[in-house]
Image (cartoon, rainbow, N blue to C red; front, side):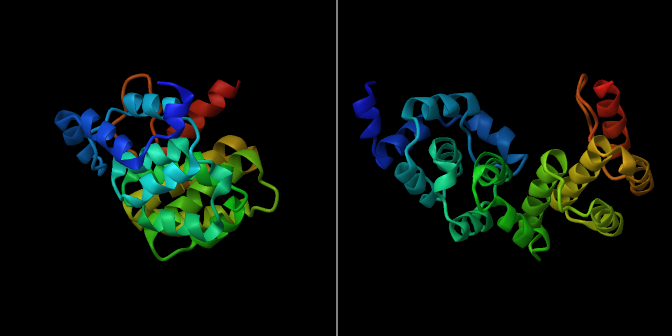
Length: 226
């Protein structure tokens, strides 16, 4: 396919291609994780690579509400081209865990409104929206801690993580682990909170993978740092 043809690809053509990639067995596996689509992600990325960046097509794909189409939209969009309110609306519409994850990691983190959205989402009454705020906070913990109150974040984790809904709990636990990994002065407290709350202690972990249980995660990552 030539670049000219790619640039002229219509929404209908892309949706037909996605429909052709649908695999019932893949859908069955994905639905166990809350993702209602049956497209192999490797094949989806190949479609995105061919289409290249197309912001308006990305917006059209997003508006379909179809999960595979939205994932493709996030791969071909221009992250910095979205407005703050547009991203806020998109996050609140993104109920599929994979769409939510890709939106935050592939788009919001690269957008100039990321910090403003982090603050807005952090204490949102919707736990799925709040989980995005915590994911962005984890990014700050890892890369740009200036202005963050790490002790205050640990206070919130200690008070709320145990009873938080699943996706919010996961995001808070990730933040707890990164505080312990990246900031030695807070490591002992982060380990203590993890050991007392025991969140994700029994989470099934594949061989060769690190457990998400914060004390194990922190210990292993610090060991790797030497």
